[in-house]
Length: 156
Image 1 (spheres, helix red, strand yellow):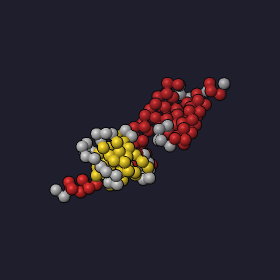
Image 2 (cartoon, rainbow, N blue to C red):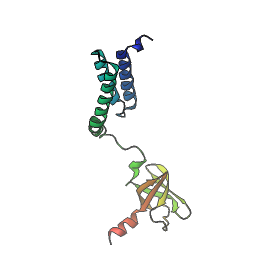
Image 3 (cartoon, rainbow, N blue to C red):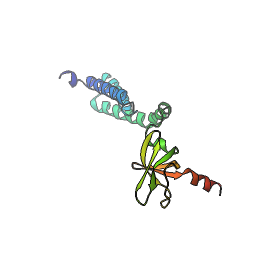
Protein backbone atom coordinates (compact mmCIF):
# COMPACT_ATOMS: atom_id res chain seq x y z
CA UNK A 1 0.00 0.00 0.00
CA UNK A 2 3.05 2.26 0.38
CA UNK A 3 3.33 2.57 -3.42
CA UNK A 4 -0.08 4.27 -3.68
CA UNK A 5 0.79 6.74 -0.92
CA UNK A 6 3.24 8.43 -3.30
CA UNK A 7 1.58 11.04 -5.58
CA UNK A 8 3.77 10.21 -8.61
CA UNK A 9 2.70 6.57 -8.35
CA UNK A 10 -0.98 7.53 -8.21
CA UNK A 11 -0.64 9.76 -11.29
CA UNK A 12 1.28 7.04 -13.12
CA UNK A 13 -1.46 4.54 -12.29
CA UNK A 14 -4.18 6.96 -13.47
CA UNK A 15 -2.20 7.56 -16.68
CA UNK A 16 -1.87 3.82 -17.37
CA UNK A 17 -5.55 3.13 -16.64
CA UNK A 18 -6.68 5.98 -18.94
CA UNK A 19 -4.43 4.79 -21.77
CA UNK A 20 -5.68 1.20 -21.42
CA UNK A 21 -9.32 2.38 -21.39
CA UNK A 22 -8.67 4.44 -24.53
CA UNK A 23 -7.03 1.51 -26.28
CA UNK A 24 -10.00 -0.70 -25.46
CA UNK A 25 -12.73 1.77 -26.43
CA UNK A 26 -11.02 3.87 -29.15
CA UNK A 27 -13.63 6.52 -28.42
CA UNK A 28 -11.33 9.53 -27.99
CA UNK A 29 -12.63 10.06 -24.47
CA UNK A 30 -10.16 8.99 -21.81
CA UNK A 31 -6.96 9.93 -23.65
CA UNK A 32 -7.45 13.56 -22.57
CA UNK A 33 -7.39 12.53 -18.93
CA UNK A 34 -4.27 10.47 -19.59
CA UNK A 35 -2.65 13.70 -20.78
CA UNK A 36 -3.80 15.45 -17.63
CA UNK A 37 -2.44 12.65 -15.46
CA UNK A 38 0.89 12.84 -17.27
CA UNK A 39 1.05 16.60 -16.61
CA UNK A 40 0.21 16.04 -12.94
CA UNK A 41 2.89 13.34 -12.74
CA UNK A 42 5.49 15.79 -14.07
CA UNK A 43 4.35 18.49 -11.62
CA UNK A 44 4.48 15.95 -8.81
CA UNK A 45 8.02 14.87 -9.75
CA UNK A 46 9.02 18.55 -9.74
CA UNK A 47 8.07 18.64 -6.06
CA UNK A 48 4.86 20.70 -6.26
CA UNK A 49 2.04 20.15 -3.78
CA UNK A 50 -1.19 18.25 -4.33
CA UNK A 51 -3.11 21.45 -5.19
CA UNK A 52 -0.71 22.23 -8.06
CA UNK A 53 -0.94 18.62 -9.23
CA UNK A 54 -4.74 18.77 -9.29
CA UNK A 55 -4.69 22.10 -11.13
CA UNK A 56 -2.29 20.66 -13.70
CA UNK A 57 -4.45 17.55 -14.13
CA UNK A 58 -7.70 19.49 -14.53
CA UNK A 59 -6.24 22.27 -16.70
CA UNK A 60 -4.41 19.99 -19.14
CA UNK A 61 -7.35 17.56 -19.34
CA UNK A 62 -9.76 20.44 -20.00
CA UNK A 63 -7.53 22.08 -22.63
CA UNK A 64 -6.97 18.79 -24.44
CA UNK A 65 -10.68 17.97 -24.32
CA UNK A 66 -11.83 21.37 -25.58
CA UNK A 67 -9.10 22.26 -28.07
CA UNK A 68 -7.67 19.01 -29.41
CA UNK A 69 -10.69 16.68 -29.34
CA UNK A 70 -12.59 18.34 -32.24
CA UNK A 71 -9.48 18.23 -34.42
CA UNK A 72 -8.75 14.61 -33.45
CA UNK A 73 -12.34 13.47 -34.11
CA UNK A 74 -12.25 15.09 -37.54
CA UNK A 75 -8.93 13.53 -38.51
CA UNK A 76 -9.20 10.12 -36.87
CA UNK A 77 -12.88 9.27 -37.37
CA UNK A 78 -13.33 10.47 -40.96
CA UNK A 79 -12.71 7.03 -42.45
CA UNK A 80 -15.29 5.30 -40.30
CA UNK A 81 -18.30 4.06 -42.19
CA UNK A 82 -21.74 4.44 -40.72
CA UNK A 83 -22.66 0.95 -39.61
CA UNK A 84 -25.81 1.63 -37.68
CA UNK A 85 -29.37 2.04 -38.89
CA UNK A 86 -28.77 5.67 -39.89
CA UNK A 87 -26.84 4.41 -42.91
CA UNK A 88 -30.13 3.09 -44.33
CA UNK A 89 -31.50 6.60 -44.90
CA UNK A 90 -31.58 7.30 -48.62
CA UNK A 91 -31.33 3.60 -49.55
CA UNK A 92 -33.83 1.69 -51.68
CA UNK A 93 -35.94 -1.15 -50.28
CA UNK A 94 -38.68 -3.47 -51.54
CA UNK A 95 -42.04 -3.89 -49.82
CA UNK A 96 -42.49 -7.52 -48.73
CA UNK A 97 -45.65 -6.99 -46.64
CA UNK A 98 -48.21 -4.38 -47.68
CA UNK A 99 -47.58 -1.05 -45.93
CA UNK A 100 -50.82 0.24 -44.48
CA UNK A 101 -50.36 2.95 -41.84
CA UNK A 102 -54.00 2.83 -40.79
CA UNK A 103 -53.73 -0.84 -39.83
CA UNK A 104 -50.11 -0.48 -38.59
CA UNK A 105 -48.78 -3.08 -40.99
CA UNK A 106 -45.92 -3.23 -43.38
CA UNK A 107 -42.43 -4.61 -43.85
CA UNK A 108 -39.62 -3.95 -46.29
CA UNK A 109 -36.49 -5.82 -47.29
CA UNK A 110 -33.29 -3.79 -47.35
CA UNK A 111 -29.74 -5.12 -47.50
CA UNK A 112 -31.06 -8.62 -46.85
CA UNK A 113 -32.85 -7.60 -43.63
CA UNK A 114 -36.53 -7.20 -42.88
CA UNK A 115 -37.66 -3.95 -41.27
CA UNK A 116 -41.03 -2.72 -40.08
CA UNK A 117 -42.03 0.22 -42.23
CA UNK A 118 -44.48 3.12 -42.46
CA UNK A 119 -45.33 5.26 -45.44
CA UNK A 120 -44.64 9.00 -45.39
CA UNK A 121 -48.08 9.40 -46.98
CA UNK A 122 -50.39 8.38 -44.12
CA UNK A 123 -53.36 7.42 -46.36
CA UNK A 124 -51.57 5.62 -49.20
CA UNK A 125 -51.22 1.84 -49.12
CA UNK A 126 -48.05 0.45 -50.70
CA UNK A 127 -48.46 -3.04 -52.18
CA UNK A 128 -45.93 -5.86 -52.13
CA UNK A 129 -43.00 -5.47 -54.56
CA UNK A 130 -43.19 -1.66 -54.52
CA UNK A 131 -39.75 -0.03 -54.55
CA UNK A 132 -39.41 2.54 -51.80
CA UNK A 133 -36.73 4.91 -50.54
CA UNK A 134 -35.97 5.25 -46.82
CA UNK A 135 -36.66 8.84 -45.76
CA UNK A 136 -36.00 8.57 -42.03
CA UNK A 137 -36.04 6.21 -39.07
CA UNK A 138 -38.51 6.46 -36.22
CA UNK A 139 -37.78 4.06 -33.38
CA UNK A 140 -37.47 0.64 -35.01
CA UNK A 141 -39.47 1.54 -38.12
CA UNK A 142 -38.26 2.84 -41.43
CA UNK A 143 -40.28 5.74 -42.81
CA UNK A 144 -40.42 5.23 -46.57
CA UNK A 145 -41.74 6.88 -49.72
CA UNK A 146 -42.68 5.14 -52.93
CA UNK A 147 -40.07 5.74 -55.62
CA UNK A 148 -42.90 6.05 -58.16
CA UNK A 149 -44.45 8.87 -56.10
CA UNK A 150 -41.08 10.60 -55.86
CA UNK A 151 -40.72 10.54 -59.65
CA UNK A 152 -44.28 11.87 -60.12
CA UNK A 153 -43.68 14.84 -57.81
CA UNK A 154 -40.38 15.64 -59.55
CA UNK A 155 -42.09 15.74 -62.97
CA UNK A 156 -44.69 18.28 -61.86
